Amino acid sequence: MFRRERADVFWIVGSGFKIRHAMTTLPGSVYTGAWVPALCETWILIPTAAPWPREPQSKTITERCPECTTIANRQDHHEHTWDY
Image 1 (tube, rainbow, N blue to C red):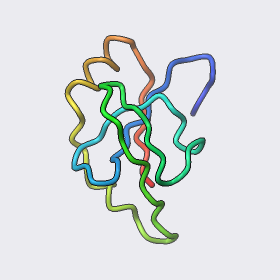
Image 2 (image 1 turned 45 degrees about the vertical axis):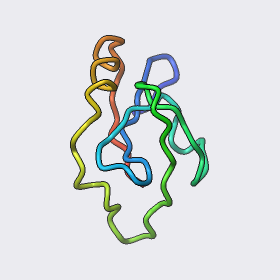
Image 3 (image 1 turned 180 degrees about the horizontal axis):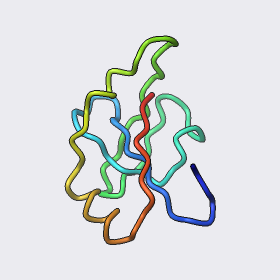
Image 4 (image 1 turned 90 degrees about the horizontal axis):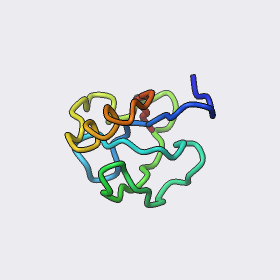
């Protein structure tokens, strides 16, 4: 569950990426095609949501950016995996 009083990160697979990056921006607050910085300062492109009832292709991607992982662990973020 998302709560404003704690530090949350959202692990997403940006368009064109093969690994997950962590971002602090709430995924529902940005539009498809927006560029958002990850914790590692890589800019990721918000993908188009998979139409219901299809599963997002990113569901199978579990590999995480090592730099984002280090930062998220050091800053003790609460983690969420998010698929579009």
